[in-house]
Length: 318
Image (cartoon, rainbow, N blue to C red; front, side):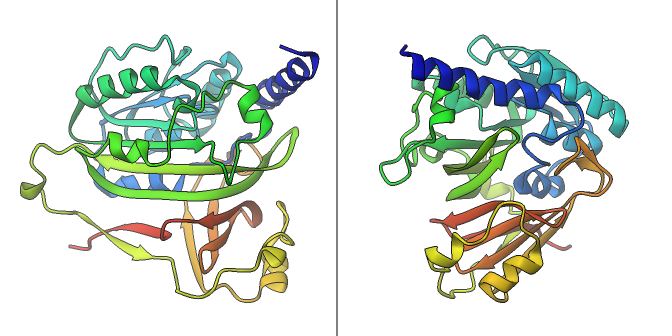
């Protein structure tokens, strides 16, 4: 490894570890929308494992809603932060410091989470791990995964490559891997964001939420979809680029005009936007065609350009 590569690698690890060690800040924000959307599909006491949990934002949220959660991460600093957040939130959670290359599932699960973690494994390793977890998932169980892709149009940022992204997924490969399951939602988009210690950068993302079914025809769907695509033109890149991470909603509206659609989710008290635990954590997405801005507690935290139709998964009212 040359000196520049070594310095880059060390810089990335400083971002990773220093922000975890700072117990006052949130490194990656709060729970994901699709984890919130799981709630009508699960029941209390279900077993959850969160692989590469970071600060535990998703595992802790499900633990708040009665699940028995286990949080796994390679970073001992991250796991200490999970424990601190669990204490603050008043929930119990099992924790494990473990490299996913060495992780062995020793239980059956109802929910498996892996958000921006399995792309650090080789193709053969993630297939082995997820294949085992598919087998160990109870009927009707859920898998929620997010990966970063390296594409010709959207190459991975250097800091992600430096911390070990294996470029082990082809476009659509994750969806194909779960082709024998019920795909509840699948998203593909470019996301721009920033984290403590590094500047704004772009990731091309594929995300999937799917359910294990022995006989889908006998289950019946218990959810429906709401499109967040108005059919209007996307913002021009000139206007899109004027919005900065950290801007408030008034600034977005001044630059872009009125959003065509708005989606808001109130997570309540959760791992959050700035502080590790927020008394109230609200995500608000402003859509302009397939370009969008996500605000967490009033600040722009992410900028999106969707390839798939943006949707919301909603429970069917009975």
